[in-house]
Image (cartoon, rainbow, N blue to C red; front, side, top):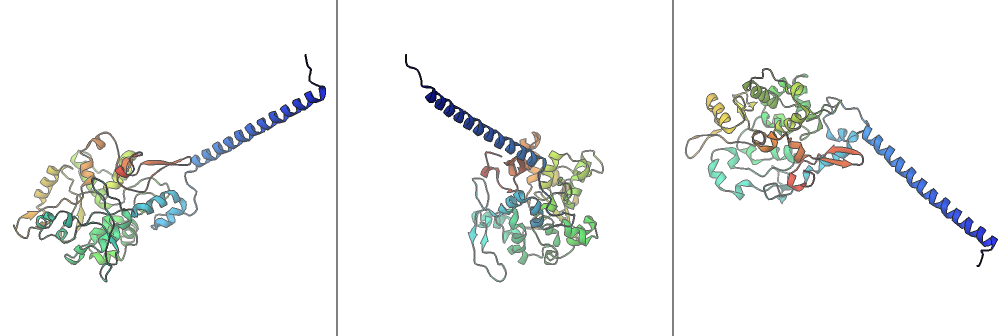
Length: 355
């Protein structure tokens, strides 16, 4: 039998010791890195945002909110995207800017896609210009420069759903949004436009001190109160009584609805006093004797459903199952340890894995 010389045995033992120490050091370093990462992620989860600026009930510029919420603000800016799906959506079409319309890009014309609409709406402003809706980033710009402005004198009421109106309403109403709402309704559109700086912004849906969702549109506040009254619930206050999950649809229902302008004061009204179904809304219109216009060829009194997404949603499987609008159009996503709502509002078909 051969034996290992003592010096060689010492060298082998020393080598093994060095390897063992190195392995332990690597494991320790990995464990320390993992522990550090876990601690950092827990801290991120405990601090969903860092207060860089103080937000108040008069902070209407979304860029200022973006200093505290950069992830959400980056998503919000992406609503400029124009992508068509099988069932809708807009695509970017070039146009030559002119003195009346500085836009170099617009969406496709629905009147070109379906010329029957021109006959159907003859005598109504929508027979002149009706395009596929673009993202929230363009809602103010597209309303300002639509050709419908040249056909009828649109009222300031239109700003209710085409701009960030919460702060302007408060200014016009000396702190009372209802009074500010009424004041802007009575203005010509271009006069009201001077009071508006941004399209829909953070302040329109979030309470600045708590970030809780809130309803700021008087039309919805009054409309949902009338709907609840028809269901036996008196004096319903949406910002006090709605659940968090309800608010995740109500903030969208502030604007994605059917509506009409009431009387010479052009007061915006959501016709829900008898319910949300089309028969209920028609019964309401017949009771108040409202018509949108008189058809130029037939002379018949006409109604045009505007964009009744909230009404249709409430009659579908999603509402019955407790699924909110934002669950599909603004689904949650991960950013580090944080879970945030995707503020790139768009079709669920463009985000199918998370929607």
